[in-house]
Amino acid sequence: MEGFVPWPPEFARRYRQEGYWLDKTITEILEESFERFASNPLLIAAQSGRVYSYEECGRLVTRLALHLKSLGLELYDRVILQLPNQPEVLLTYLAILKAGGIPIMALPPHQEAEIGFFAKLAEARALVIPAVFRKADKQQMAENILKEAPSLDIVLVGGGTPRQGFHSLDALLADPIEERTVDRAFPRPDPDLPAVLQLSGGTTGIPKLIPRTHNDYIYNFLCNAQVCALDQRTVLLLAIPQQHNFALACPGFMGIASAGGCEVLSDAPSPDAALGMIETYQVTHWIAVPAMIIAVLNHPDRSRYNLKSLKIILTGGSKLNPEVALRVRPELGCDVQQVLGMAEGPLYWTRLDDPDEVRFGTQGRPQSPGDDLKIVDPSTGEEVRPGEMGELWCRGPHTIRGYYRVPEYNAKAFSPDGFYKSGDLVRLDPSGNVIVEGRLKDCINRGGEKISAEEIENHILAHPSVDICACVAMPDPVLGERVCVFVVPKPGQELTLAELNRFLLEERRIAKFKLPERLELVDALPLTNVGKVNKVALRNTIAEQIDKEGA
Ligand code: OOB
Image (cartoon, rainbow, N blue to C red; front, side):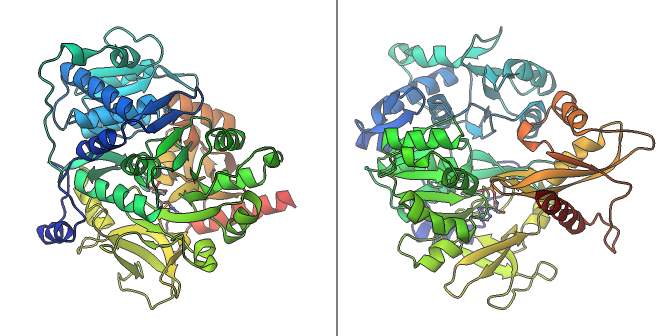
């Protein structure tokens, strides 16, 4: 497939021999579950309480896949999936796979800038959107994108009345096409080719698409379901966007579905909602970013909720500080299992039987025996001495060998021997687990959601009052980091945060979660001795400033 970088044959051979790659499709693996666990509940829509059994999910997925086929979707067609956390997002995801398509896992808050970009880069055939998301008219967004992306010709709309030429997802799900369809065969994708395009956290001006193959992604979630000991009794709460790799495959929905368990899917991000759902649905496992754990720990009414069913919080996306980790057992009565994960594939987990200092103080070790890691001095590419800090490089049976359709960038992002350069600065502790100490990459980690500094800077530079600018992370007690922008205005120009953000939302049409939350107007930006903007100095300046204001 053009633009996809496969594993070299000697690695593919090894991964098969060692039993990591099964040469099945995601649809085949999950259909085994639909049959095997038929009457078990697979999915609960948290807000309505509607329960979907494995059998019902399988039936609805086949129906929707037949509709996609009759609308003209073909093998390997790319489909942008932007629905919020309701069961339809999973039914559609599985239906796209069954019809042979490749879902692009866009996030619900993405706007025209992001969705238009993915549509053009991947030459997407179809787009699946909610009619409205947080007051944004997504059908209008789709109309605008259709004018610029000639490959797009199918638009499915969840909720609300579809505009002319668009299709109602709800109507398709309610229409039993299977009863009048004789040919129910679907094309079978090659397990060595991309099944899903994930999004990269982003460290450059342009977002990247991450091709996850059937072989690699299946191993990713099967191995992960074992590491997290999921089984038929597991009730997993998910309130982060279902499209995220963490929510989909680590172990996420696919991990739970492979194990016969049940997922409670919620689109309410508040700590109150999470606490209520744990009690109502007797949740045993909860996938939560550290910001959510902090919010729950600090929640004044926490003792009103019965959390007895909760056994483990699976946490990652940003660093869980040991002080917070230490509060979990005494205050919430459950354990934490930490993951250093990346949409590119690498997964480092602490294990449930690790000693306390490993479970609370490290971000774990590779989940697969087939993984290789190196900790290197980024300036030389040489491995550092044991215990020293360096950049984490990863390679393995579920770590990609290249981003989709960006050969020049891949030459820098991967080593010649195929390691993914994570951009994370880590140290290996004597137990063989990594501790995340910082990062090289230029992004802001806002409660686990990654925001590329360069991407936002490029949009801000388009504002008529801005001469130069730099985005950096500013510390936040709950989210960890938020975006702060330093701007040198053009001579005689003024700028406020409100005006800048109006411009970014209305004229640049970017997702709201990426907006700067603080603007600092300055006369000049500090430079390093090679003439680049000194972001370390800017981060220190804003951290000191916030510290002073707090005091
Ligand atoms: C997950 O994936 P991404 O692709 O959104 O972000 C990856 C980056 C890592 O390179 C690292 O910088 C940061 O997020 N990160 C952590 C972390 N887990 C991720 N930093 C410190 N401590 C951790 N535990 O975020 C992701 C993917 C799968 C599972 C879980 C998280």
